Length: 122
Image (cartoon, rainbow, N blue to C red; front, side, top):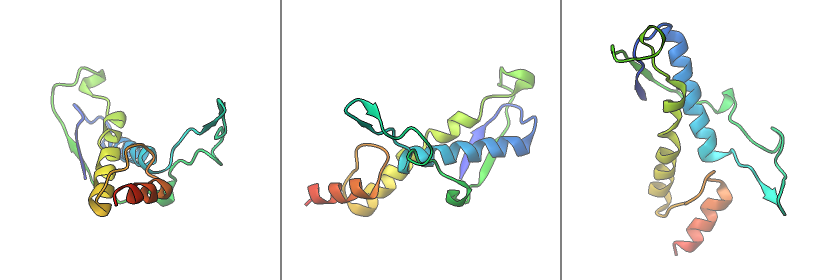
């Protein structure tokens, strides 16, 4: 569930899409997207190594659009895509910590990092 004050929702369907897309970006930051360097060289330069979520990874999202008259953008609209991604990674990190009883301190939270965190928690 994501509730966002969007100012004036000029196109509510597009606003919902922005909220959903931002949330999926946050999921990617939390679980899969990682720039990997070895000896100063980027070794994840393409989408075959830099894993972004796809439509198959999309969870069900309930977007709640809150309209206000405080938007300073065109026709009273506010930016909506980026704010939607901000809370997702911390929420996932907290859910993982709650599930395994210890924290993974860097993103993305990969299975290997979870196993390492479990080993340190003992």
